[in-house]
Length: 149
Image 1: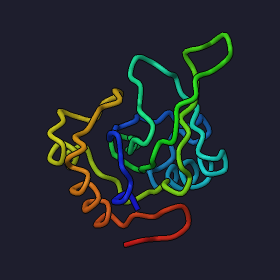
Image 2: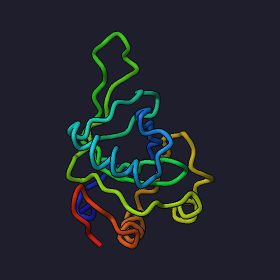
Image 3: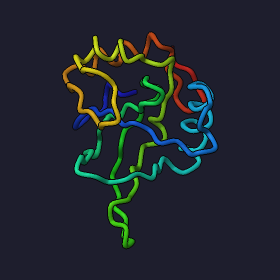
Image 4: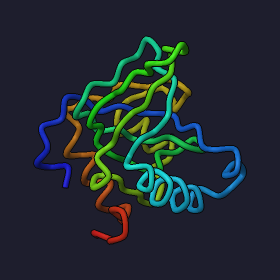
């Protein structure tokens, strides 16, 4: 799916899951948060907008429990119109939301020469998109409710 999208960048987004999901396994968080909650909220993810802006049409890799556990394409960033202007939402294309067997921190270091997974929204080399897609294919990627090997 991602091969034919003209991406602007690839980023890692550390995920803040709802408190009721804290302590669940990666598999349960993938099922409950990414394939259920995020889709039921039309791909809208509440977030704190800080000095690191993610561009529209970015491929976002979601980090949870020191692993990459999901992926989606960002349609747009909407800043809050309330008094708390440091909050807003990322709006993801719900058809692009996918989960897979987690990519570990060690695997990410080898793929992208990053030091470690952290709480920072790390930018990844867009030139490594094909390599990432090959890894995702081997990890058994699942889009919403259908598996594509």
